[in-house]
Image (tube, rainbow, N blue to C red; front, side, top):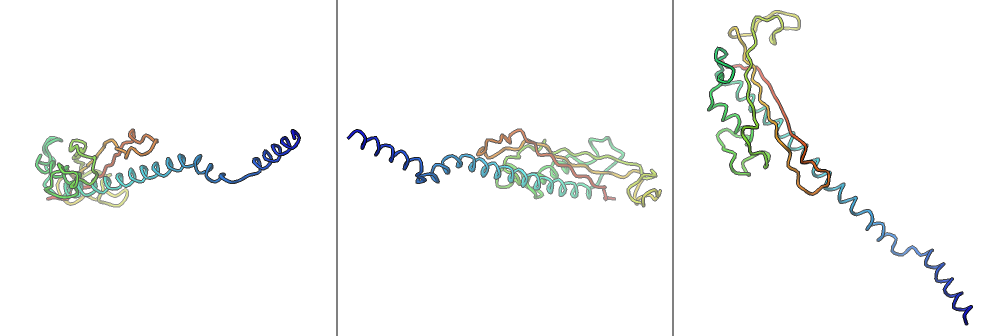
Length: 187
């Protein structure tokens, strides 16, 4: 009787070690946390890239807007463009529209980008008589149309990315920064 019991126990142990039922469920249980991490991490990275592209386009639009307004190169660096136009350009960077205040999240291009002070505006005036000007062919000394000084408008933004909080990648330390510059064409 004892031998039969041991023989049956041995057969059950062999069957158990050769059994594959439940292996797929075990593999899924082991791999699902990794798959979820990859999925949500990818979503967070794609969102950061989308936000960077949106901010880059808004910097380009704001710079183009400011390059067409009156710019006075005879003034000090901070007052070459009126404060009202600078405020309009900052709000345009945040909302993509002229005359819309970014108080409502629905009006902003990037929902967590709220600080108008994160948009900096700089106007540099370069000499029109310089041999290294921007209007002639390379090495030529052709002067641009306009006065002795040519304004170059530079609009920049720099702020922290706010992740969705779904990944363990800690993208909260990522910063979104974009800059665009254009020659002023106002006369």
